[in-house]
Length: 411
Image (cartoon, rainbow, N blue to C red):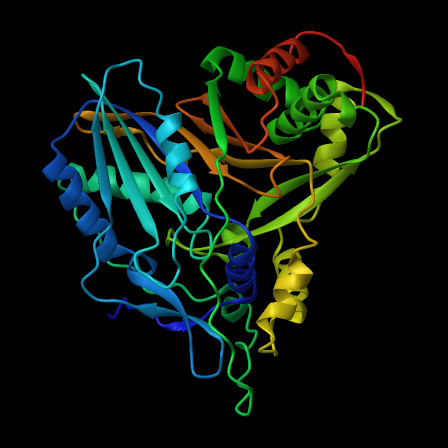
């Protein structure tokens, strides 16, 4: 079986590639691990990881028809940066450095690793280009790396098809007489996002799950309600304006995909008017209702077709970029990976917590709240060029109070 990745980008992959010409769409996740291993052991685990996942040896280049394509590159290694620090060292500052360091998508691999060694614990940060991967992908990479460290064999995976091909849709067409497209400049503007994190204890997380179910909504709906109401309370200019809240949706289930390192998401907005007054849990129910039908193959097909109409069958890359410059003007994104889908014990190492996705999702003023539940505890992050002060602490208070009290909050 060959596991070399060589194909044209799908429509949403191409969209992220175009967006990356405008602004950074790189992202990261962080894993807190009880226990330590040698640097050499981590390096060998990364070698095995790269051999397993085809996209970890791919770059993006223009083919002779001016279409962006994934191309396999031999002989590359995943960069590993190592720090030896004390227990109180904030891993968030290293994640900030990674997001401020842009990937050049014409060079493989499109993943970097940071190993933060503390006296008895470890933090592993994986940063990736969004063109070739999503947040769920990185959670599987953590699992594979930790399995490799225990000596478990990692089976090579087949190259993942684009979502378009999975849906039976044709690839970007060849325009044989197209004029030559100028090389895209990599003169990126500098970004300096700020990252914060917080963890809810397991008992409160369980109360949140139960309360959300009682109220006819989901944990995701509750997180959306908490982020919205808290943001409006602190950032007063948002208190009476219409807010767009974006949620990424995992497409792996609807498309029956495996654990490959790849981009397999859609996104969907829910809008909240400024002059209305709602109970906290009514907001949470609205957030859930606004996402109805998004976890289906039909939704993925419609979503992909929208971006096919926008980005396929043309070589006018600059025109596509100009159109996309007006997109992604949301105030809030809640990117929730749900419950970690594997056991967290790996021999002498224990995966204690996972944080993320950590990503700049808009133009800089937005708040991007990442959520994932690991070991029955909800972990949250906020990423923003202009973070709302103490947002996560206030969100946590809001969620805790909502689990026990009826609330009436202006949104």
